[in-house]
Length: 166
Image 1 (cartoon, rainbow, N blue to C red):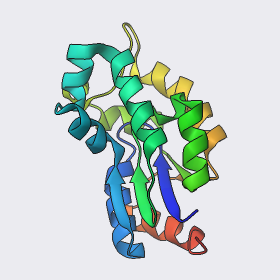
Image 2 (image 1 turned 120 degrees about the horizontal axis):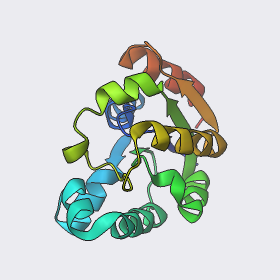
Image 3 (image 1 turned 90 degrees about the vertical axis):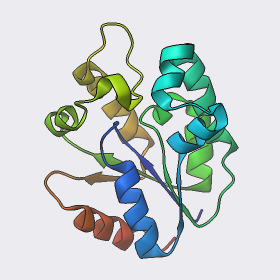
């Protein structure tokens, strides 16, 4: 269990914080969204637009359950918590950390929903997605890090102090 797995809402900073954290802890870094894009030779948004949410989620679950990494900070997609088998696998290979951010900040950061690669069902809003997923993130996480107005470096320091024993 020497991996650190970051979960959280789209635009919560998983990739940005993950990269900085991996540098600080001298670990590898993997963004599972990039693995999905590479697997499909398309952007996340192209996959969603052309093949639909269900296809996207099937790809995401397959990628997550196939991860076999060591000494790696893993930034997952925002929908990773929708897949119980994937989350069980991730808990086996590392410490799952939920990067918690307020709805207001998430909404501000998600100004580009048409291109961001966020799986929203017809009529679903960022707020309804947030309200549905937050309890799942909290349930799956070994550690919850409340981001608030902390800087990226402050968040990275908080996680690295907690995970030093990995």
